[in-house]
Length: 391
Image (tube, rainbow, N blue to C red):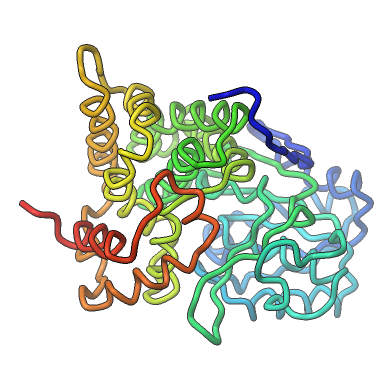
């Protein structure tokens, strides 16, 4: 990497990390001059009995709040509009997003809508948000999206069925509270899906055409932490050390993607969510090794480095052989944590592959970031290999 490369890094989010850190939520709201909060949470968090962990710190600081828990795993734009209406009706002047990426994305969108007006659909794209939002504080309860430190909020457009994002610096959260104790009850499957999602962020950012020395630093440490700790977090959910390492890996992966972007895995995963409701982390996880295998020749040196970070012994191997070990390591890690091996296993119809490929290539920024510039036929071929690999 040439250190003369030109790049810009924006990192406005105040980060508090540590076991028990969520107890500081009320004080954090006060730090940012919030007087009444909209708390956007995953329904699963409420069902798991975790809501008091968020509301008690607010009550202790005398901060009134309203809870919005109608968040879908793949949220539509109208969810953000409805949550914004609730916030307006109740005079909320700050927003807390707690849970996975969906809840945090809805919370970020609401904070922007409260000051910019209009509907969520008005801000799909890059650079369309003109005003800063109300204070927004994120509390991730899974180690996956890194949404607590990114400038993106991703939604399903109900009118078109497509998936796209709001993007812009005003979406960066003002504060993020990362408490690994909140992730201890995450089920093994969700731990696996979100963990490989975080790995995908870091890996794609590392090999992005926009990568630079700072993003690479975040990426490599995130990949190391996730590869070394995800199996333990899936197998022994109460392992606080593994959970903390995963949460840190997810955070660093979010930092990496915010500064260097993601690639073709994400572009190809979007149709799986938009067309078939496949959770984003699962879609990324199934596609990851197949897309990386396609990408190898785009940067053999980097993929050889990744093989080593993923624990492979590359001594005495050619660059191409070493890079191939990165793919092998990803297939092995997926198998170790119970990720389905093919698109067929998660119910994707084979006859929809051409349509998915066309949609994937419209996800312009990730496609442009990818180390190889794919054609339509090549994307179809990757989907087909991921649907039912050759024997």
